[in-house]
Length: 106
Image 1: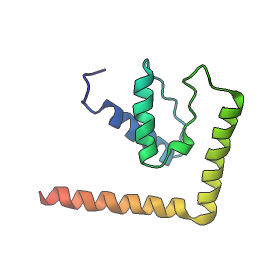
Image 2: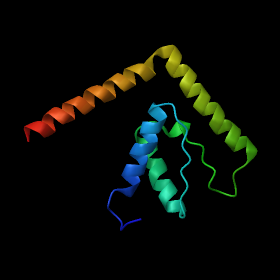
Image 3: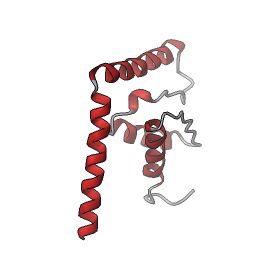
Image 4: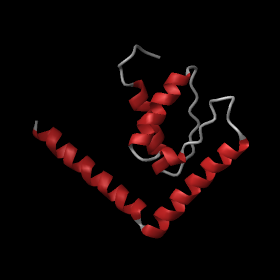
C-alpha cells in the first residue's frame, strides 16, 4: 500500500527478479490490472518477461498458456546451451559493482 510514485512496482519487480535468479517461483497478484501491467513491463525491460505466465484476463485460452510455457522453456534451454545466461548474470554483477563504486565515491 502507498501513494503513487513511491517505488512499489520497482520493489516488486526487484523481488521477482531476485527470486527467479535464485530458482524460485513467484505468484504476483494485484487488485488492479494496471499494477500487473506496470510490473510486467518492468520485467520485460530487464529481459525476464518470457518467464512470466500472464493469467489475469478471462480471455486467456489454453493455447496461449501453453505457448507461454513453451517460450519460457525454450529461453531457458537456449541460455543453457549458449551460455548466454551465465554471461548475463556476470554482466549484471559487474554493473552492480560499478554502481556501488560510483555511489561510494559520491
